[in-house]
Every structure is written in structure tokens, then in C-alpha cells.
Image (tube, rainbow, N blue to C red):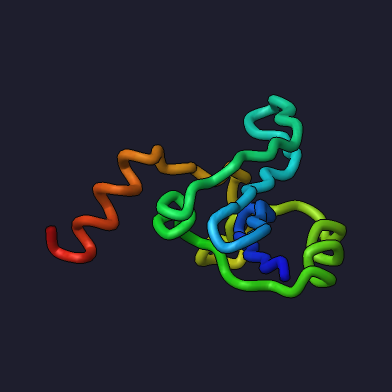
Length: 104
């Protein structure tokens, strides 16, 4: 069974296909006047564990979320900030982060 996570500030989402296969879907957007097409990135389990800002979501909610409009962080005054893409940690950065968490 597939599982899904979404980053509510960016609209980017992750699909878990099986126990150790994850796909990060970066949605298309305009950043600083430049068009960035959608992109799919395969993630390792360690990259998935260390990536930040994603919350579980049901599959049917992803489609309705993508139609809702501009994805950008909401600022403290309630206005929309600038859109950005999720940063994917490298495999070595992920391993280092996990080792720090377990105290090695």
C-alpha cells in the first residue's frame, strides 16, 4: 500500500512505493521569474528520514491540494511569502544526521 506525505508550504509531496523506495515529486512553479518544471527524485530511506517539513496525507487529498493554487509559506502577517523548492539532503548528509540523532 502506498503512503503519501506533503509539504504544505511548497506543495511538493513524497510517495512511498514499498518499504524502502520513496519518490519526491517537486511540482512545477515559478521562482524569481524563472519557470521550473515538475521533477521526480528517488529518495533513499535515510534521505526520507532526514527530509524536513512533510506531513502524512491521504492520496485523494493530494489532487485537491494541487488545485488549490499558489504554494508558498505563509508569513507571520498572514500574507504569502516566496515560493521555493524542497532541499534534498545528500546520502552522506542524511547518514551524518542519523548518526548524530543516535549519538554516534
